[in-house]
Length: 497
Image 1 (spheres, rainbow, N blue to C red):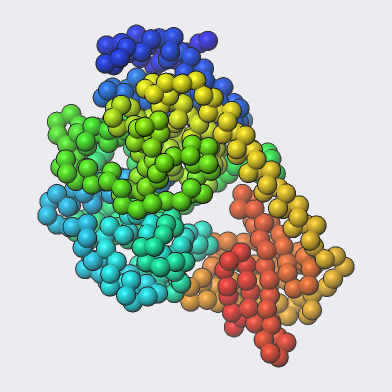
Image 2: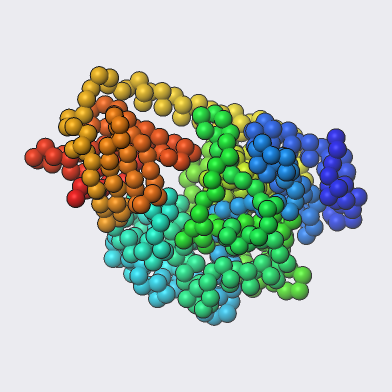
């Protein structure tokens, strides 16, 4: 088995680094396991770094940056950190807490009065802490970035139209828009934009010279491309645009650079020459704040932890009697995961360039076992069975959807009657036009487009222009006069003008 020069160098020095010597054979076998798992899950490219006892004991790139091209992934290749960015945003808030400029329990309205929620009581009671722990009762509002392109302040104004999914602080629903709000609070207190403040207060002190707060900051070509399985064929897809919710998940980094972040977060935020946070503030980041449900991650059904909590930007659970802190990151075609076992001083970070390639979970737990907790459980094999099962269920649901179609029906009205402009104060604008024997839908000036064939009755179905978005299902409703009144498309509701 041929290893890269980087890994060979690590092999020659690792016994000097670790308190418990790790043999070159142990690292070599781990390297083989990672590569075998990558191939098993068909991920075009990956990068991994493992930190133990304040030292990097393993780091390597695998596969290629882009399917069909020869350029390999190395430890300098840039990948999306996605939602693992959230812990970095929390760290910036912690820095402001340490400087006496902010408190975790300050009212959000003190800094961001334009953020208005459906329930005025929740608007008044919302605290900075609530922005970070997904407990507000408001479900995902990712349509604000997936189906439209609006500035963050407009997102905050529209939040007043979003009905809560459950009572305030009574459950867990993942929320990216509130991390955008956290970023705007940082900007108003610091007097500079989130990206520059992150570079100044985190990346520069840690020496993370190849880490970018957004992809638009990247100036070289050693970066991965996103990939997606479309009709069971893995294809290269477009990069997503830099988002208005950057503080929720915009950072890009490499295995080399992210190692410094992993080590810093393990070692109470220390770095050579200082520390990012006071010890008590760092401790607060990892203090459980709320619970998350088992179905948040299918891996929980295999792990069966005794407890599951969420800190400030970190998921948490027990594993073999130890506390695990972790967080995943997912953008279209790109994945990341960071995990740590603090009492073993062990951390791992894994990048991937295939959409929701859950080999990341398998390799995280394998890392914990391999370098600290023991055992020979084949996590890749086990979790592949779990996720293949879920994939099979999704296909069955699609097949049932097709079987339930009522054939030989026609729309109630001529196609031209469905055409027109539909609007919503929350979701924006949808323009429906006749296209051949079907309809075309253009949502928010090309933010989302789909071509829809007649399905049955007044339901239309067809592919989004961006194939990795899947297929859209549109339903039309009528008013008392029998005229088309509303358009319902994949959870978005518009009224005809």
